[in-house]
Length: 271
Ligand SMILES: Nc1ncnc2c1ncn2[C@@H]1O[C@H](COP(=O)(O)OP(=O)(O)OP(=O)(O)O)[C@@H](O)[C@H]1O
Ligand SMILES: [Mg+2]
Image (cartoon, rainbow, N blue to C red; front, top):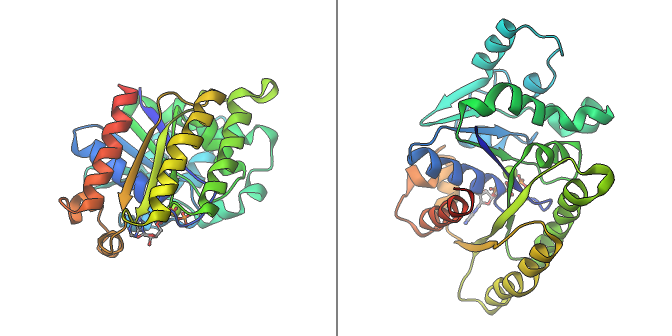
């Protein structure tokens, strides 16, 4: 049964998609069966691995008829799960950006959880979910469907605010008596685009270790969280242009090594 891991932060552009891709690639390179799900209407993960964007998407998988036959479902899965290198991925859909219109029902927040449990969890060791920089029905679906979360920040004060907002949402669906629909546990925080020798960055990392992590642990949203920095380097963008993960593009570069440390910290806490 797959461990479902969401990569989350409400701040845009901090490195969620890159983190999702790198963790998925490392786990797949280690021989695990890995499925990525692109929940972001921007479809960045789908584009970054070179998906065929004309195929069926996660939106098709989440909007199936309740009484769909097993045969039709198998056909849909075969049309929506794409095999790229050693990863499987279900591509994103632009319409997911209009989430509130597409998923207006109160029960719609359970759709991703139901899809994973009914149709894909048994076939994989890990399901990695990339999320939009948003707080909406999409991120709620992901929080409910996930066993674990990796939070990503870029070390700016705006991103620290973004982490606080995600924590509020995770606390709602994990701890609020009326809406306790998720068992999600925060595994750790990736501080991406690290400029390690700057005073600002050193202070920021310290603030995560001394303030943010203890606060998360005290709230009961995670135990023994990791804090892992990932170096800022142009090769991350180059890898995106080449439609490769850093693990395939520049395996021995600093950011690729840092992301392997992230994956190792994740594994330590799950297995
Ligand atoms: N460590 C890094 N060094 C340099 N550039 C990076 C690094 N990590 C990510 N980037 C670049 O920053 C941009 C944003 O990264 P990414 O798409 O992973 O962020 P995101 O949080 O998923 O964004 P969004 O919120 O829009 O989904 C991309 O162009 C990516 O190539
Ligand atoms: Mg993204």
